[in-house]
Image (cartoon, rainbow, N blue to C red; front, side, top):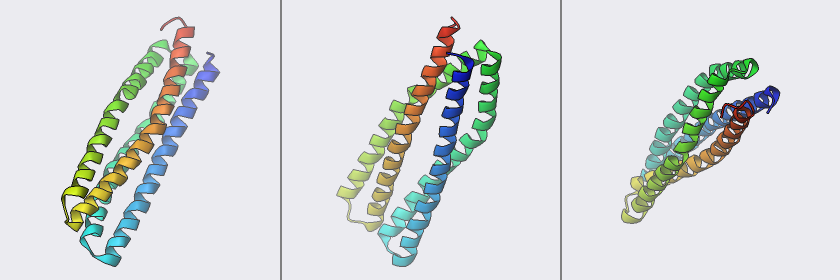
Amino acid sequence: MESSALLAAIRTYFAGERQEMLIILAATIIMTLATASLYWRSRDGFAAGLALTVLLAAILLASTSVSLLRRDAPLRASIERAAGDRSVAQLRDEAARIATVESRYPNYRYGAVVLAIIAIVLLNLTSRDWLRGVSAGLLLLVVAQVAIDHYSERRAHTYAGALGAWLARTGTE
């Protein structure tokens, strides 16, 4: 794989990451406003549990997104320089980083399953409206996590393949 193809793969990966983080930020704002509005209009336990859970999930997702947005720009520039300079050592480190990222996706799925089970148990074992609202909020978080990870994992896999192909072509992998 030529350096220009690797540079294109790097740009595609980091552009996709940035787009995903911006979508997450927008979605957290929309969901927080929607559930706060529901609570403000209804003032019931379900809306309170839902709004609180969505707010906590939004804080978690938004803080992760902002952290990645801040980290990715300098990382991308560094990796692009390494590709342009044909720095095998730095690109090998990036391939190892992405391999670690890829290895974590099963754990994220297990976490989503655990949250879904908790939500379903809460939904079925209680008649308290606020706990049912928490359950609905957890299910929204599970759906968001599964969707985010689906595209993120696909993007990481493609990027890892491009890095691996370039390293193999240079005879260092």
